[in-house]
Image (cartoon, rainbow, N blue to C red; front, side):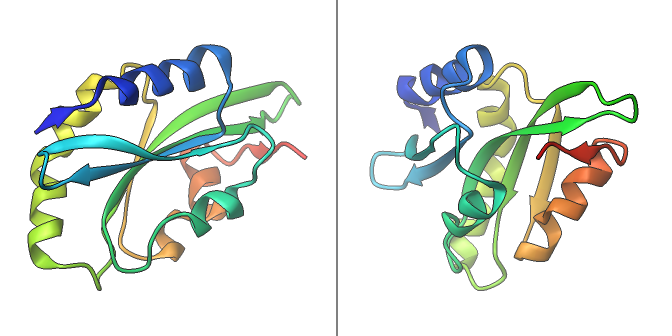
Amino acid sequence: MAVHDDCKLKFLELKAKRTHRFIVFKIEEKQKQVIVEKLGEPTESYEDFTKCLPADECRYAVYDFDFLTAENVPKSRIFFIAWSPDTSRIRSKMIYASSKDRFKRELDGIQVELQATDPTEMGLDVSKRQTRDFRVMP
């Protein structure tokens, strides 16, 4: 599975310049490549992000998660999310699952990985646990 250059470019913008809060990626099956489907503005929330994920189609996504440590120090973690809802097609699940590791290697700087089949598996409470129960920044 090929990865469109725009995927790496937009990820670097998220990581280094923080010009995006999140990126949703889609596999274009006809072209056999991963493309950028949606970019989230820096002001968008985690709820805005989760609303961008289709209820019945697989996607990859990265989310720049800001939080405060127990010492009130602002920090950030980049989450990679493999979204594979139970209602998506079996073929789609197989393509996304078999391409995930290769695609993730293209995105240098992923700190946390989540696999989710429904929204409860990637809620803010799950994200907070992945950052050792730090508090979300207001």
